[in-house]
Length: 253
Image (cartoon, rainbow, N blue to C red; front, side):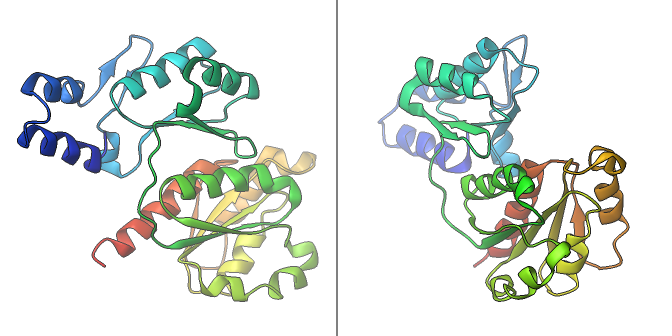
């Protein structure tokens, strides 16, 4: 339940298009609905500007389908991250065209409505192996109403690939920079722009990168200012943060 959906419900009630019972049925599960194995936060987008987000690993396909079904029954919206292809297929079988699927990002949505577009995010990767996390970030931005441009494989091993594309920085409100190995790219980017930089360490790299810990520590230790760092491989978190920065920037315009 977001602000627009609540306004539509209350407006329909005021016009007599809904009865009090029908309106109550749509609103009664606020702030959450208890499914025993999950408590669906239907109120989240009203508070946060971000709908209910479900991390899929560790949940059964049946649980994911039931969460999606209950979300649609309440005319809500949910975003499922790290969705396996087989899980998506089951969602499609059970719920059909109500499901949107972004295979590269491993994201599925149900009940998604097009949001008013505001701002632009530039998603930058150090290498091609970082693209799955980058797509998670870019698709999250798109779902939350921000346009996302991509600039991939411009890491510090060949920094001329980055510097020859600096014009793309100018039109961005926020830059998300994704890197594994030693995680140096966010420091370079932040030293070349006045835009906020959201850094995402990835688990890409050989043994001493420790599954992304080396990149994480490098980004947290950056000498460039204006960098916010999210958790290892957390493309969704980076996209959500960028979208919130942009939403607040354009709120009163």
